[in-house]
Length: 548
Ligand code: FAD
Ligand code: NAP
Image (cartoon, rainbow, N blue to C red):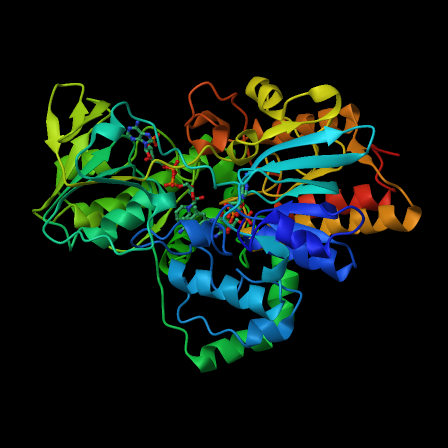
C-alpha cells in the first residue's frame, strides 16, 4: 500500500488505529480550510482526496482557457492576512495554473498536505448508530471511522463525462474538460469538435479556435455573455489590494453574491430609461459579472425588467457578430439574461467569424451517438473528428455525494432520497444523517450565485464552530430535525419560485441530468441573508437540531 494510504496516515489517529475525530472528503477550497480549522481545534483529522494533489476544481479543470470569473482579490482566504499579501496574482482573473499554484501555496504554508491521502476515492460512508460514528470505505480497500464526516466534495465536481452511446468506439482522442490530462494536447492542424457552450465550452472554444485545423461547435443553447476586462496585476497593484484586506474581507460577507459589488444602483422603477442605460453601460464596461450580480435585482423577478437587460446584452452581441445568420444561432432569445450562469469571455463571438470554425445546430439535429470516425447527428451526418472535447458540465450539487454510497440512520440511502427529492437543512446537514456535514451542497448559496471562497469559508466556519460548541458541552451527536429541514426547504422554494431562474433549464435546476428532481440547487436569498440565518441558528443554541 502506498505511503499516501489511509493506513499510513493512521499514525496520527486517536484510539484504535484507524479512528479519527473527523474525516474530511476533498482537498479543494472548502476541504483545505475545513482540515485547517479542525486541526487548529486540536482534533485528529484525516483528509481524503481522489486527485493526486490539492486544488479540487483547480486541480481537475486544466482544459485550455480555464480561468476565473471571480476577481483575484476576492477569491481568497481571510484567516491569514500575510498569506494574502505574500501571494502575487498576475492578473485580475487568473487562469487555472495560477489558481492551482495558489492552493498549493496555501496547503504548504498551513502544512495541510500531511493530513491527506491523495489518489484515494471514498466509495461508501455508513453511519454506525450504536457506535455514533461514520464508517468510511475507500477504493483502496481501506476502512476508517470517525465521529464526524464532513463532505467538502464540491458543487461542480461530478463530471457528466459518459453521456453518449458509443464513446468508447471513437478512434480519436476524447476528453471531458473536468478530467483534462496533465500532458499537453496538440490541437494544431486537427479536426476538433466541442460539445457544450456553457462557461467551460466558451473558454475552450475561444482558446483553441486560433490553433485548430477545423473546429465544429455542437451548439444546442446559445449563451448571453459579458466580455472580460482582465488587466495585469503588478506588485504595486497587489500591494494596494493588500492595504484593502480588511475592507474586502468585511465587504464580501454581506453582499448578495459574496463579490465586492452589490445591487446599489437604485430602484429600477425610480430611474428614467436613460439612467438605467447609464448603469448598464457602466457595469458592462467593468468587464466582470457586475452587470449580472449587481445591476438591478429586479432583473431576477420581473420579466419586463429582464427583457430590457436581455435586449441590452443582445444588442451588444449583435454589434460584434453583425452577420444575421450567425446572430440567429449565437444570441439567445428563448430565456432571459441571468436566469442561468452568465459567462465572461474574450473574443468568443469573434471565433465564429473565422473560416475554420463551424456551428453544428444540435438543437435541430441532436447528437445520437459517437462512432469511430466522430459524432453522428440525427440527420445521419457523421462529423469526422480527431479530437472530441466534452464541455458537457456536471451532475451539480448532488452528484459528488450520490456517487458515494452514503447510508444514514436505519440504513437510509442519500442517493435514493435525493433521487426522489433534494432536501437539506441550510445545505449544511441532511435529516437522517447524524454528524454528517456538507459544504457546497444543495440549498446553500453556491457556485455562480456566490463567489465561492466567501460561501465556503462561511459554511466551514459554521460547521467548525458547531463542532467546537458540541465538544465544549460534551455532546457527541448532532442531527438536523425534519422540522428545520422542512422549514428551510419551504423558505428556499418561496424565494426561488419568485424568480425567473426556476423557469429556465440549466444545471441550476438539475434539468441537465435526465430524471433529476427539479429544484433550484443554490440558495438565492443572498449570501448576507444566508450568513445571518446560519448565525441566528447557532446563537439560538442550534434550535431545530437534536443532540445526543
Ligand atoms: P471542489 O474544488 O470541487 O473540491 C472537491 C474535491 O472533492 C475534489 O478535488 C474531488 O476530487 C474531491 N472528491 C469528491 N468526491 C470524492 C470522493 N468520493 N472521494 C475522494 N475525493 C472526492 N467559483 C467561483 O466562485 N469563481 C470562479 O471564478 C469559479 N470558476 C470555476 C471554474 C470552473 C471550471 C469550475 C468547474 C468551477 C468554478 N467555480 C468558480 C466553482 C468552484 O467549484 C468553486 O469556486 C470551488 O473551487 C469549489 O471548491 P470546493 O472545495 O467546494 O469543491
Ligand atoms: P454547463 O453550464 O452545464 O454547460 C454544459 C453545456 O453542454 C451546455 O451548453 C449544454 O447544452 C451542453 N450539452 C450537454 N449535453 C449535451 C448534449 N447531449 N448535446 C448537446 N449539448 C449538450 O457546464 P459548464 O460549462 O462546465 O459549466 C458549469 C459551471 O461551472 C458553470 O455554470 C460555472 O458555475 C462553472 N464554471 C465557471 C467558470 C468560470 O468562472 N470562469 C468556467 C467554467 C465553469 P444545453 O444548455 O442545451 O443543455
